[in-house]
Length: 317
Image (cartoon, rainbow, N blue to C red; front, side, top):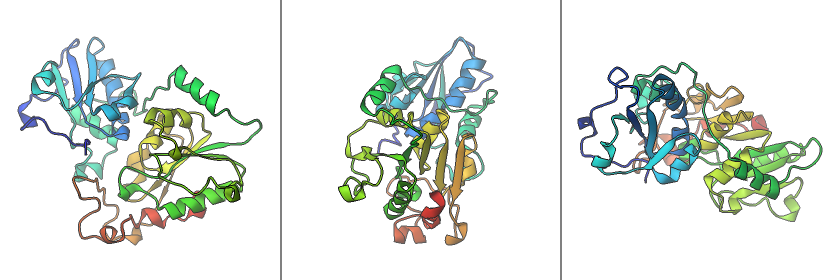
């Protein structure tokens, strides 16, 4: 619910940012309430702004919950804020509903959507930035030391923030069972209680650490991910963290083209579902309000993305 928050009746009444009118030394604020992955995709723009205006300060106004992803990268301010607080800045870059525009999203990668909206060229590329602190690293190394030998550590994010980008739990179970046979350390990451059934003795074929049974913060989950040799997941926040940390990854895609979401993740291997499974695929649907799935389409009736769930678990394994 806090992804889209409007506190100003007519945002267009605020003078928009223009690189031509911006002076080096101006204070710049980017308004984007959330979510985690979206804020991470702002980091190439932030880097480009700092290069073009080295004397300026850059701040991101966002929901406090999501702002933790930018810790160590850029200053944040809690959003929503009062209009007079917003107007304290010399330059305002309004980013609400940019990625949610279906016509734009189907042609342009997210990082480039943000850059084009601001009128800034990504001269240093579209590399994402995420910072893991030394204390976060030390805590993971203390609590979850890597096993000796050549046992790979695989981190898995099973679910996304919206059902259109979530792979069915039953299929994840097949994936994880398949990985059991490969002698891996498997870490399940996500919101508390998202997946269960792998902690019993009968299932203890290899080490499975179900971190969703522990109330980890987002940053704690990302710190665990930072120790992994491979990430497997849906098109969601931790996939982009893996890209920023240059961890090899495998991503699963259905409703949105993989190219648009992962072309700036050089160590990612995308797997796309069968587009023939849905007449409107790819739909580029972003959940807004109560519209979880495209209205009157087959996915609204089944409760999952037909294209995403056409990916065979054996292919993932």
